[in-house]
Length: 288
Image (cartoon, rainbow, N blue to C red):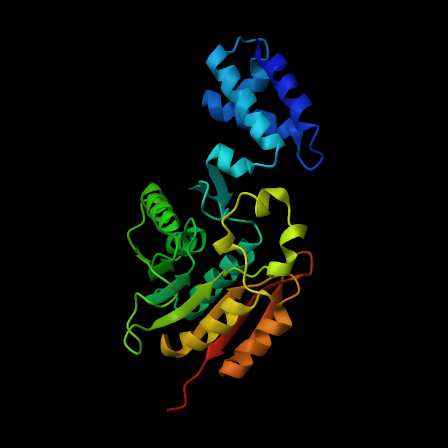
């Protein structure tokens, strides 16, 4: 079978799922298997494809048609101009989170210039937030923690992939690897699980059936981790430090209220390009 015929077979399968961009995704999948650029598929449409490659392509297309995430099939996802390795069992980085990371990069560049700073990322996943910060703000000491051992292993793999040496990862639950009152940070950031458990059935198949539940759901109202982190972070933040969150599209006010009750000041709700709540930040000023 030649490339163009194989692609057409794949398009027929994927078109059965209206949420999939079949024209684009068949080319991404085949170029991944053949280890070529997408442009190769356009240039050599009549080139024959090895039967093993054809079989693997059809198998992957069938999995995709059932909702299996494209990122897991391809094994990579672009984030902040960096190509992260991705695998099943670890949350897929999303463009929404770039709003948070860009805010932090701008904050660090203004506040620390060329001075050293420390930042803790709670719930590192693939390392998207922590490694992007480490890459674009090399004057920082970046730390990350995750309760998912698979996530830590993948983040370490990505750290090596990008050649970064200013990042340290810990396996543990929230602040458990750190010493209360001793280990302190200039910034604590988290993109915690924030989907209400009651919203489970309304999620896309790609999310609810394939991504790790521990990285998705934040209790009945989705706010459990904001409550826990905001309170516990008081023991791990320096004076005049920053706590920053990604939040769900309608959670800005609730998270702001949680932070206010814990004593954070200058709290700001930042919206994304579609004017939805996306980031909440606040400072901690100690009056000792």
